[in-house]
Length: 277
Image (cartoon, rainbow, N blue to C red):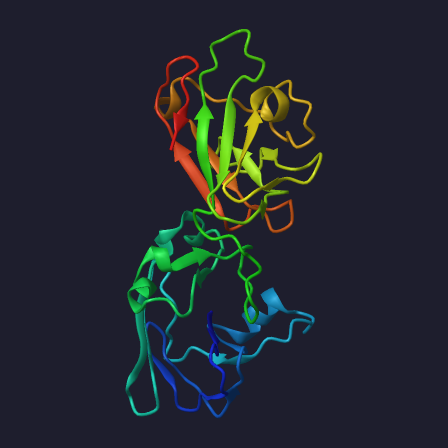
């Protein structure tokens, strides 16, 4: 599906506006009020069955793509023209910008609708939706942008037998405001991103510019008592030679993996020598 939003202060007459590349569709007589959304979808019945079977959301669908067109799974050029044939918008997207928008059901959402036109063709102009399948016809609830919370430092080879922490992971909030990461997940496995749930015992927030550390002993290892330890793990001193990596994943509900993802791959490490950004 495609979602359009009126970001202006005046109502917009959409009659005759058309998608001419990527998908084909011409809007009929309709007006889009300031702040309102409208959708154009591949199959109206299938779309409603997935997103709004009870009619509770109340989104607006202008119609379905025509001429047997559909959005390319790998990416596409999209061109929107006015009734006289002048180009309103022309950009290219790629689902490969983010791994989870490439087959995992997350939609692409523009980071800033008023951004420079060049960013519409670039990964830096987009982000993944907060939840799987997106939020059609309404604002996406995420307020966390790419790079706002990063995997800042990790120790994968804890060699000191007197060190009570074992392996550890440090996260950093790169913004100037606090970010709540309660219900987010850490893991060492791309096939199971939900190994350690952050903030299970108590809410977890990182102050603007601040850091938080999670350790093998206290939080995610075999003997950790943290109730968020769902599947224990530790890192290997051999790093990505044996396939080791670290994954940070948001969650829209504390149960499912969300659209904010950070991953770091690291090589072999000396004892008690950490990796940092």
